[in-house]
Amino acid sequence: MFESLQSQFNGAVRFAWIDIEDESEVLGEVDVENFPTLLVLRAQHPLFLGPVTPQLGVLVQLVQTALDGRMQALTGSTECALAVRVHHHLSQLQA
Image 1 (spheres, rainbow, N blue to C red):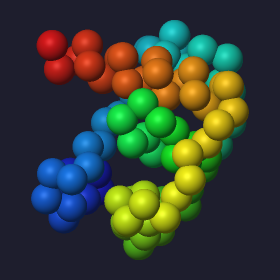
Image 2: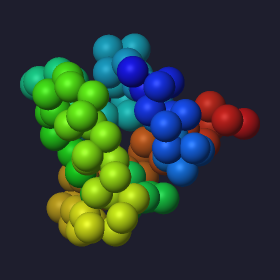
Image 3: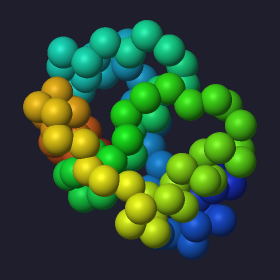
Image 4: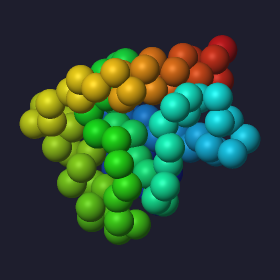
């Protein structure tokens, strides 16, 4: 589903899967209880963190809302710290 969305948004977004068991250090103190849980970032700024229904339309709407700038950044310290760790983790994968 992510690959399909990646092409639908013409490179405007990047989707990445992080296995929370194999890469638990990325989560830090965040406790993921429901799946799938999605983190939406703009650079290192968290816009959304939470479970989503596994329906393509819901994900498309959520991503489009973020792209349109209609989603305010989360300001909680936990979400901000997670965003920095995820951004760093993804940067290392590209290197």
